[in-house]
Amino acid sequence: MNRMGKGILIGLFCLVLSCGGQEANDFFTVTKIEAGKDGKTLFLLDGEGDEFTTVISIPNGNYAEVNVGDKVKLDVAEVLDTNPMILITRSVVVLK
Image 1 (cartoon, helix red, strand yellow):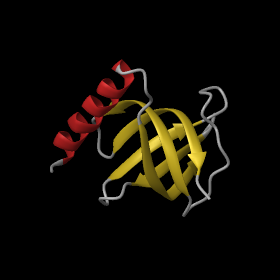
Image 2 (cartoon, one colour):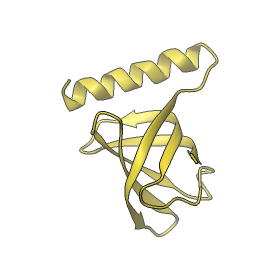
Image 3 (cartoon, one colour):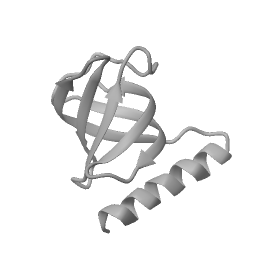
Image 4 (cartoon, rainbow, N blue to C red):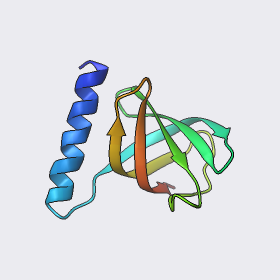
């Protein structure tokens, strides 16, 4: 599936689950972390090897202590079709 098709699919998945009163959750591996002015940008890979990014920060309410190599569960609010795709997240949970 191409990048745009996957973005549309993830967006529809999030929309369908949010309409049902549930939260959309996806699992990713952190491949790189860049420090920013107000938080950190996480570079992520999903189970299919597709790349994504998300920004975590205290003001956004989604900050978590994350290290490269960590597996994370994201509560995705929105998907922006960029390259790589940007995930706007409500929360980030580091899995053990």
